[in-house]
Image (cartoon, rainbow, N blue to C red; front, side, top):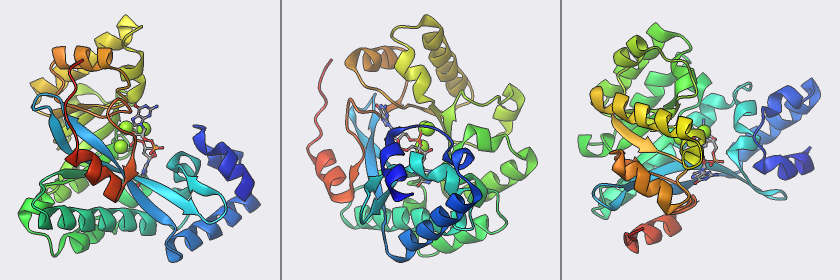
Length: 282
Ligand code: C2E
Ligand code: MG
Ligand code: MG
Ligand code: MG
C-alpha cells in the first residue's frame, strides 16, 4: 500500500519479491499514474573531477514525488518497475529529461556531463536503440558526448552478444557508456575487455568499507588498475569522508561522487551548488 512504500523507502531490498500479485497490480497502476500526472522527477548528484578539482557533471537519480507519500527513493520502486509494462516509458522519460537538461546547460555554456541509469529491461528491449535515436535527434555531437548511460555490471552480464551490440550502437550515436556498481557482478576479464564502455564506477560497498577493511581497499586498487590498463575512465561512488577521498586520489582515481560533496539535489539547486563549488583541501 501507499503507506508501506513511504515507510520502506530507505531500505534496500527486492520489493517485488515481497509483494502479492494483487499488490503488484496496484503498484503498477500507481506507476502509470506517476507518469501521466508528472510525479516523476530527476535529482542530480554532482560528479567531481578529483584531479582537476572541479565539477565534471551530474548523475540523474529518479524520484517519485507522490502527492501523499512525499519523495520516494528509487530503491522502493525501481526493481518492481522492471516487472511492469511501464519500464520502457519510465526509461524513455529519464533519458529525455536528462537530454533536456543537457540542452539547458549547453544554452548556459556549461559543459557538464549528465549520467543516467538505464532500466535493465528497457535496455534489453527491442525498442531501446530506436528510443535513444529518437531522443537524440535534435542533439549536436557536443551534447551527445556529454550524455553518459550507466548500465549495471549485472545487466551487462545478461546476454553478452546482445549487450555488446546494443552498447556499440549507443556509442555510434555519440553517447558514452559507464558500467555501474562495478565489482558486484562476475565479469570475466575477457568479457570486460570486449565491452565498449568508456567508464567504470566502483560500487559504493567497496568504497565505503575501504578505510577499515584492507581487502576492500585492495579491490578498489585492483579495479582502478584494471580501468587504467584498459583506458577506461574510473569513478568511485559513495565517498563520505576526506580520508577516503585522499586515499582514492593517491590511488589515481579520476572521479568521485558521494555525500562528502553533495546529496542528489533538484536541478536548480544542483546547478547553484556547482556554481558555488570550491575544492576543500582535506
Ligand atoms: P546508483 O546508480 O548506484 O546510484 C547511487 C545511489 O547511491 C543513489 O541512491 C545515491 O543517492 C546514493 N549515494 C550517493 N552517494 C552516496 C554516499 O556517499 N553514501 C550513501 N550511503 N549513498 C550515496 P538512489 O538515488 O536512492 O538510487 C538508488 C539506485 O536506484 C541507483 O543506484 C540506481 O541503480 C537506481 N536508479 C536511480 N535512478 C534511476 C533511474 O532513473 N532509472 C533506473 N533504472 N534506475 C535508477
Ligand atoms: Mg548509477
Ligand atoms: Mg552505482
Ligand atoms: Mg547502486
